[in-house]
Length: 420
Image (cartoon, rainbow, N blue to C red; front, side, top):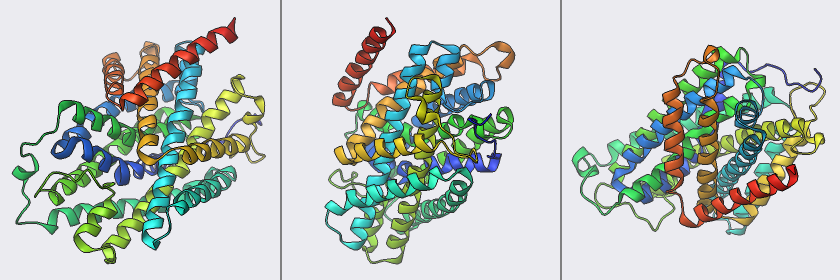
């Protein structure tokens, strides 16, 4: 069909897309934000988020292999729940991942601005230029995108490994395992809030599922890509978490800083050190990779919404080579640009955390209704994933929680009016 996308993504390509979506704002921003909240219990927050992400990842893999079309939980909601819940999932995904992309773009602007001593106004300008450039690239097709993705992922992983080694060897005499877990003022609420922030950092595997239509042999490829992606990212997050705790073993984590990895290294070595520059470069590449992959993922959901008529049909247009939904990609770029112009990094990440937790709650709910003959994940896995997502969503910022619940209620009201 002329309006279908080619199955051009292999297992390796799917893993690269997953890692590219995870190892950016997750490692270079989210871990720092979680450390501000969980303090010396950062590893517990990372672990809880990782367990929740694993249950959700298995549910996503189950759904993607049973119903392999672009659109993720938007399509699964239509297939296994109801059109209304499918539409809700679509809008939640677009908002959540556009906010994540805006966070990544703003963080790239922040890093470049601090490296070159640019005024704050340039942070948003750089972010806008990044989004515009990647929107153009993604509109040209998936093959070019995957090549750049691989390069960005390799640089990102090298930077994280370098930071992890630096954190462990910098203070061998002062830092030890016992000092990492000394008594502090952290509350259970703060740990769970940090875990909610960290959960977003794991959810790049969802990009694999939203591209089910483009993955070769999805029933084989998607589950394996999700498990490998989550395993690698979990190990790297734990290594980064240990390094952060080691670097702060002589006192509680300083809540007055942005807690970017670049700041942590610079505080010990100075901003002019080679390692500081490399960490900053790796962070820029990693977060640029996240923006690239999120434009890719969000555009596929917008494509699916256009096909079903929940958005104008024009957004379902696919280019002549069947490698990109060009109009959907452009719409995605505009949405991300609007968000980054109207918010800051922490607020954008909070919005993303709340909406993505609701989105994956719907993912788990849909997975419960997959027929037994197509099922390879036990129902209890999806049930635990559903409950954990709903519980963690309560621990996001109170303001975001209240506004989010109000917006979901408004969605149901307006959707009901339009249906009748």
